[in-house]
Each structure stands twice: as C-alpha cells, then as structure tokens.
Length: 610
Image 1: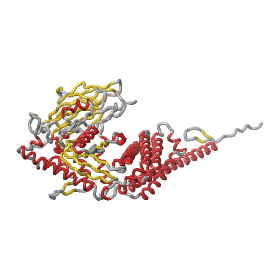
Image 2 (image 1 turned 180 degrees about the vertical axis):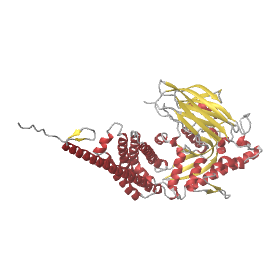
Image 3 (image 1 turned 60 degrees about the vertical axis):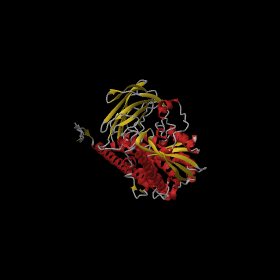
C-alpha cells in the first residue's frame, strides 16, 4: 500500500501573535509601508501648505500696513503697489486654505476648529485688502493728510467732496468686514490662533472706524469749511478747572470764519464781555426744570451745564446774535488738554514776554498757575487781575490757532492730535444746519445725549462754588447691573470723587467759595448728576453710606438724579445710586465728561439681546 503524504505548511508568527501566510504578510507590509509614505506625504504637504499660507498672510499684513503708511505719508503710487501685492498674497492664502484637504480637515469635529477659524480669517483678510484697502488707496488725496492740507492750513475741499461717495461705500464694506471678523469662531485647543483672531478683530475695527470718520468728514467738512460760501462759528474756550456739563466754564471765546477751506479766528473776547441783559432761549420744560434757576441762556458762565452739547451751541448762537447781530452757523468747544495735544503736534508757541508754552506746560499754566499768578487780595485787585489773566489765556489760544493755520510740518501728527482730543470728547461741534447736525449727532464730535433705550449712565460734575478746584479732582465711576432675566433688573452706579488739592494757601478765586457757601477753604462743592437709562427708577441714593437728598428731573427722556456734594481737601467721597431699570437690548454706555483727570471707569453690565 502506498503511503499517505501530508503536505506541511510553513507558518510564521505575526507581530500580534497571529499566524499569517508569507505572501499575505508581505502584502500587509507593503500596505503599511504605502500608508506610512502617504501619511508622511500628507503631513509634509500640510506642513508646506501651512508655511505657504503663513508666508502669504504675513506678507499681506505687512503690505497692507505699508500701503496705509504710504498713503498717509503722501506716497500714493507706493500705496497702490503695496495694496495690489497685499491683495495677491491674501487671495493666494485663501485659495490654499479652501482646498479640498483643508476643507476636510476643518470639517472634523473637535479637531477642525482651528483650521476653520483660519479659513474664516483668510476670508476677512481678502475682503479687507481687496474691497477696502485697494479702493481706499484710489481716493488718494482724501486719505493723505499731506495732500489734503496745504501750507497755511488750507484744506483742499474739492478732492474731499469728490471722494465722498467712494469713501462711504468703502466705510460700509469695512464695517461689514469688522462684523465678519467678530463672527470668526474660536480656535479651540490652539490658543495662539485665538490671539491672531483677536488681533484681526482689533485691526478691522480700527480700519472701519478710520474710514467711517473719514467718510463723515468728506460728507460734511466741505460745506462746513466754506466750499459753498463763507461760514462763521462761535468757538468756546472751556476751562475745566471749573467743571461744567460739556467740560468746563467758558472763560473766553472767538469767532471762526471759514471760507474755501481756510479758517481764521477773530473777535476774541472774555466771558465778562458778554452781557447778561439778553432775551432767554426756550429749550423746553425739562431743560428749564433742571437748569432754569441758573439762567443758562442769558449767563454765559452757566450756558453749558447740560452735557448735551447742542443745547450749549444753541445758547451761544442766541447770545452772539443778540450781542453782535451776527448769526453763526454753529459752535465749537475745546479745552487746554486738547490744546496740549495740538502743541505736541505743531510745536511750542512763544508769548509776547518770551514765555514758552508747550504741550508739557499748557494745562498747568492755564488751569492752575495763571490763577495764582494773577491773584489778588482786595476786590479791586481781584477784578483787575482777573482781566489780566483772561487776556493771558486769550493770547495763548490765539497763538495756538495762529500756529495751526501756518505752515504745518506734519499734517498727519496734527490730525492724530485732533483725533485724540475728539475721542476724549475734548472737541465738540454743533451745526445750525439740520442735515449736518444729523450727521454730527452720531459721532463723538456731537457730544450728544442719545435718545434711545440702551443702558446708559452719564455722571456729570457741575462746580457749585465758583472756584477752580476741579483741576485737582479725580473720579472713579462704576456701573454694574444684574443679568437680563425679567422685564427689569437692579443696577448700581458708584461715583468716587477725590479732592487732591495739595497743602498750602490759595487765593480765594482758586479755593474759596461764593454764594455764601459755609465750608472750609479748599472744599470742592459740586452738583453731581446721573443721567440714567430711560425708564430707570431711583431706589436709593447715598453719600458715604448715608441716605442722600436728590434733585430729580428729565433730559431727552433720561431720568436725572442730582446730589449736592462737598468733597473736603484730601478726602474721597463715595456716591451710590441704586436703581431699577428696564431690561433693554444694547451695550451699556458710560460717556466720560472731559475734565482734567483721566477717570477710572468700570462697566459690568451684561448686554441683553433683542
């Protein structure tokens, strides 16, 4: 009989312990090797692609900044070339980031968050360079201070007016992109990308704000600067050493005459030269209820108790018309702090006696030193020195205006200085022409009380002693409210006022009181008013924890709660307003009255939805 042979199969242990036939093992190795190579290739591609994207986005950012700087420096051709390069680089980055591999990676739950964030940011960058920067560069002169302002401070109005439609469209595009930037989702586990996102949001906000302000200027500045015929404006010089609602007491004034882009100041005068024997101006029952006892429309010293600048503008127009027979087209106000910014841009001025006034000393000179230099003991001396001091202050103002309307070395620095003053509400403008005022009212220049329902807390200091102690006053303001549940919510506004008057003897004009106020010299006496959210009710008011007497009224729909307050030298007084206010949509606003100090303002008010 034959033998039964059995074939023997050779097996090898797999790494996992399984037994896999030889050919299968080899195929598996090939698959694993191929997969590894593919993975390395994909990783390498993503690495190179990420580097390429980073290179393009960085280049787009740098060229965008170069385009902006070139434009502001008057190099229109350089700005145009840099803007074109920025557009190309941004679009290259966008194409890479929206390729199929990037889209798939961005779509992976959890893993794809940072990749989606980068994709969305690239869309914003493309829009910013293509739809905002490039068109803005084409406006040329309108965005180039060196081209816009010629020697002598003359503004070229026609190019600005011609650029107005394009600037309006570009500003709308910039604001839309800024909103788009704020909708970019977070990067999740990659914090540095969130930092880039925050930076992009800040940059788009800045660009949108710049273009919005430029578009507003192009819209109304030509007419206001006399493109269609001469314009005249009442200009008030406010000394915020004695606080008033719009900043400070009107110590002096001038009339600005604008024609075809040129502006000159003449008819400089002191507040004591404006008669009190004029017909009052009726600004409504609410206004009269709050301020009528101070005769604001006939006494220029009390003409700006309200923080709503259009009221002051109308009063000054009325006073000047009765004083001179001339009807001005509007009003402008500024203060010594704003003058310090301007002097920082245009350089110092020299007084007739050789004294140099510059950015570093103009505030102290005008708000402190001058009151001591021109002090007096007897009533006769006080009156005479008061006239001399006002003449001194007028001369400083005239010298600064003369410097501004001369040959300006750097128009950009001057515009930056003015922009800083405007952002701090240290320059205010009112126009008697309704279509212009409608535009101004929505800007920081308008210095208006908003007539809407969003959360609002405006703290206003009005000096109630006739002294100059607000130069030494510092403020802290806190506005806190509960969450948005329910139709109403409780809120609290806390105000801390510190009288920092140094030890020493001061003239009565600086540290004394008038109107028979029986308080020690150096005591700050003021009326502190809170303009609250529309519909708000005052539950309790305290001063240093004790119940306080309030004077209540209304202004443009906002309830006003005023507390007569004294702040002794070297002490801090705390006022608290406990409120119940409607739960309304919108972000809280706490406008800052432009006094000498830079107050600490804290807002903890949740923004409620529509």
